[in-house]
Length: 144
Figure 1 (cartoon, rainbow, N blue to C red):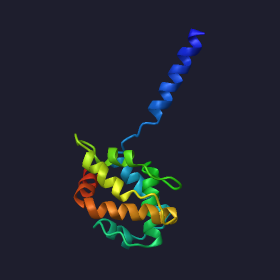
Figure 2 (cartoon, helix red, strand yellow):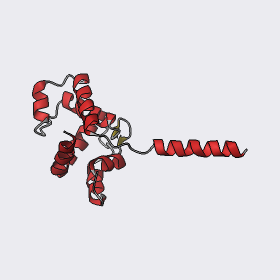
Figure 3 (cartoon, helix red, strand yellow):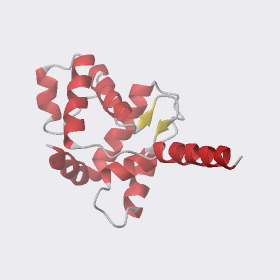
């Protein structure tokens, strides 16, 4: 009986730690960018725009953004943005993430418009980019 309880406790601890967000690295970002660019047939012209933080509102770009957010476990197609994961990923090295979380929450809407997932992810991304471009640039430059 003691062994059964010990095994169950270990299993529960394992599940709890598996649910924790895993911070992504520069290598992860490069790999995911490449995968998402290939999967969504992103042109070289669009990639050049993305490198200057210009993300046009078109189907390819929306799908590309959603793909990256999905693969980084920052967005779920039916539930939307994972605010805590976004804060963890973007707030690396920050002691106080209160303001960052408030900014993320402002942009992570609940899709009251009932938009398709790619439009929803893109809308949140553009909102956050408009409010925190220096933070996003710094996070990406650390990864490049």
